[in-house]
Image 1 (cartoon, helix red, strand yellow):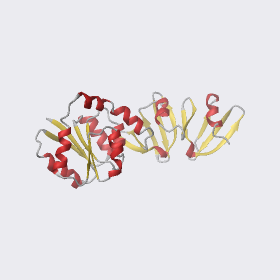
Image 2: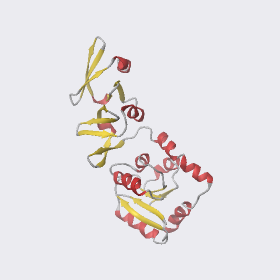
Image 3: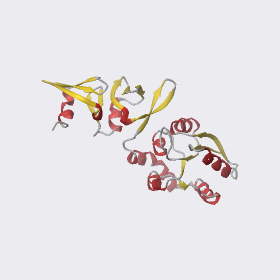
Image 4: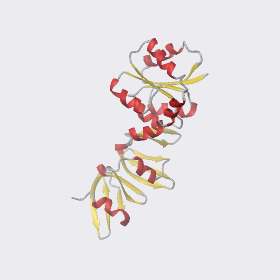
Length: 243
């Protein structure tokens, strides 16, 4: 038996995949998800062998879903948009089904899941590294909120504050806790927009309202009125932005 998860925000698309899968009793559908956030949770919980994955979805898109997976299953993209085909194969997707597709085309994708050659397995093991390259700066990230994970748009993060081994993300709508430490956050976010200004602080320069200069430091006022002190060690990061 091979475990399958279907991820698509359109019910008819999920139904069609289920219909086509009925010809393959060894493939068992464990879950259907209609958004990227639920998809990440389901895939990490159930550890499927195969995932049929849409690209344009609420919460996280298909490529962003992949960056949050603990283990990487066979990925078969199923989408109505042909412009993502190159990116799909850059992350070594097993196949790219362009809607609407026939049962015969679906069968070709299933056949590829049976490929266990050394070359393919090596290809799959490199998927995580390829994802890091193809999606260096994510537009959305998953963060903890009580007993669940929710998607936060990176552009909405005003500042980041160290919370022990974790990081607090401050947005206009609330604060969220990331499992990554602040140094890890610094590496994962676009360094042209997110600037380290203190051992325990990163700011989004698009959210800076004004800066007050002192003899040996700066005070940065964010657009939510938070004030962030720039420590001596990080003064050059601010000076580089001064023209």
